[in-house]
Amino acid sequence: MNGGTARVCARCVMDTSDPNITFDAAGVCNHCSEFDSETRARWWPNDEGARRWSVLKEELRSEGRGRDYDCVLGLSGGVDSSYLALKAHQWGLRPLIVHVDAGWNSELAVANIEKVVKHCSFDLHTHVVDWQEMRDLQLAYLRAGVANQDVPQDHVFFASLYQFATRSGIRTILSGGNIATEGIFPKAWHGSAMDAINLRAIHRRYGTRPLRTYTTVSFFQAYLWFPLVKRMRTLRPLNYFPYDKSSAIRELEAEIGWRAYGRKHGESLFTKLFQNYYLPTKFGYDKRRPHLSSLIVSGQMTRDEAMAELAQPLYEPHELDTDIAYFCKKLRITRQEFETLMAAPAHHYTDFPTWEGRYRVLKAAQSLVERVLGRRVRVYS
Image 1 (spheres, helix red, strand yellow):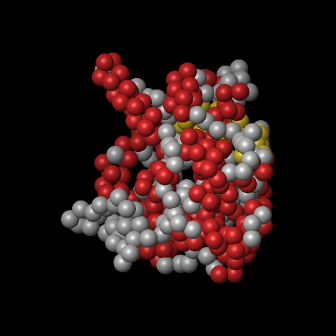
Image 2: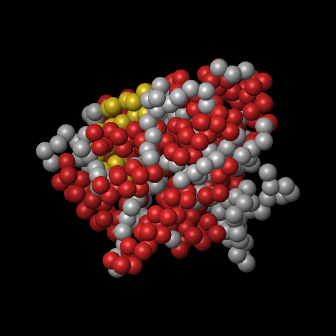
Image 3: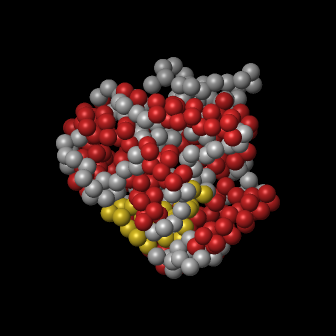
């Protein structure tokens, strides 16, 4: 994608596969400087974090008094959400656990989810997405040739969480998203998974059947209805204490018999192929780079260790062939059709309508209101 030899940051391992990356005189990239100057202000792996989270826990318990649940927690079976569920149990919280089955769960993911729920004695609600609609939407994204192929799964996951929360009268969602392992990500690689305008535009162009049951979140719901009218919020508890993924895996294994996947996002067979083959092959994006860079700047890994991990192959040839065969069978396409889609011209998500114009108008209105009121106004969590 980039032509020639990619330039790599002197501090982390982000490189010029991000078209918007810049470097200072010392060769350190803008992602590192932004982490230090902006992101750290939202990260409290210290006593301040413990104090803040103590206050938030009491708020959650107060909100849940007299109710069956005090929050909603989305569980994929991955490390972050599984560890968050275990911590919620240890904190004495009562989350409604929601799992969204989009058709790609590995057997190990299903087993891990069962172990988490059983150990914590949590109620689990599984939302099974209509496979024919999901298949049609995912094929539409493949035909569109955009980078963010995970939107069909991610959007319905978040949309389902909001819908279950509002129906249950719960206003707080606990998310396993965290700065320690996700503090760096190049925005140029793809747009928001919540952009229903973009999703529907791609499906209108390349889909073949209506999305009658697939759950979406509109711009109005995402930025006004849920945060302002329903007063909903998303909390990310892993940002309030030192979150180390390796330690989390060891605790999950010891406490509940949870088993590691051996590869990031191995809980989803689709995400595994998407991140480890589709993105690097079609776009030159290796999602290990932002992940490892996040671990570097958060102090969990050295740059040398990250470089050694990047030197490892994303896929073993036999494993890749097996996964592609399964992928084609699941989507009911031939191997030749798959190869044709891989070789087709790539597109940027902005080649299709988005809600970014509406977002800019909303942010301008927010700034005006803040100047009038003299205080910050939040329109989205």
